[in-house]
Length: 545
Image (cartoon, rainbow, N blue to C red):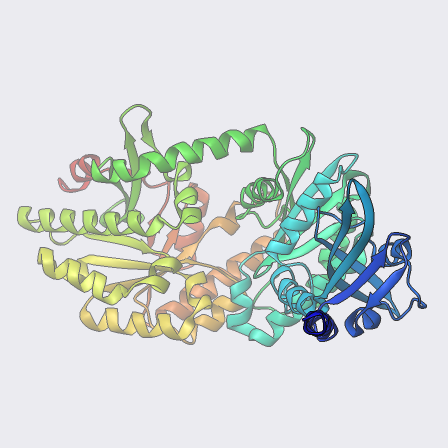
């Protein structure tokens, strides 16, 4: 029996030893004096830089037990031979009668798993195209810096290339990619080591930098270098930069970026300004916009939005139609002009809801005029790029005139020149279909640059509405004024040769009106002739004539 018991004990010990030797964990046993009395092959592989026999204190120091975070087990990292190795380590003492009689150590190697995790994490936190931090990586890195206690005053900057989609449409994605890569390169070279920068999305980049290191002139010079990568007569690059200064203690990176973006968006239509700083005025605007968005849906349901009409007239004031412009008849604030709400709706993506509302109101009014015997008057409505990109405008307009039984020739559709540049083939096809159905198509805000003459060769519209904003500039010398008159005369002549009518919009003075008449223009829209007015005022003024 004793021999059997002895044999059984030997057999069990052998099994234990085999389990330890073939374990995928490194295992070490230490006696009461801390000397290693057993180490399996995996433990010897992990502890290869150490010489045998191992001591418990020596092994724990090498494995980084004291520096590792957590309780037991802990995640430890060992740097050896230029490589980081990662282990999950468990260390236990065996005690009897409150006395340590032995200890053991278990180590599991998860270096390969960590490499996969870090690769996946890099893909998430870095932009694969430029190599900069991605949106997630940028915000995370900024939040980490603030959590560590970033001293001093810091600034959050965000940038945006105005109408960047136009670059890809006109010059191709290769040129657009080149510009983005150049911006990333210049950003890397410009910033100091402790700054954080990244590509948030598309052509939007962000920079978190100490205030003492920020200089407008340096950023401006970088932007000028970037503009030099693309010289083309059809597109002039302009970059806007929004800036938020962190001066009220740490904030979330996302919140600071949003404020910088609000500052940037505030100058989105300004080609003369590069930098915009977030301030109390913009903060109040932000709060106002938030309040506005909560009111918008209800205002639509309650039909608080009304259309005003600005007449298209001859020089003697005779009108044959008008452009529909929207106003908000607010129950508390009175009549609000579009400048108070259009840009907010564009940023939120809800402009399409308002556009649809205005189109239907215009067609309702045309049906009312038809029933009352005033069908000779037309109404023009505006179509934005978002309308065209996200819905079938041919179906929308044909359904409207069929539903209300209105002559499509009475509904004039205004499409801006910039929309044409963004997706010319699609818009030209749409214009042909609309005209074939019977609608009158106007090209709105027609400019005087190279791109405009280029477009004239391709579009077949009924009316060109010439943007007169360039005439508003003051202090032009005689040469500049003469150049503008030549361009205007040329556009009017070309339009007529292409069987297109011309309307000059934005006419504000008698001098402008007479100049245009002398250049061959016969139809006008602007404050010199008539301001936008309510439907009742328009009807009283013109239906009597």
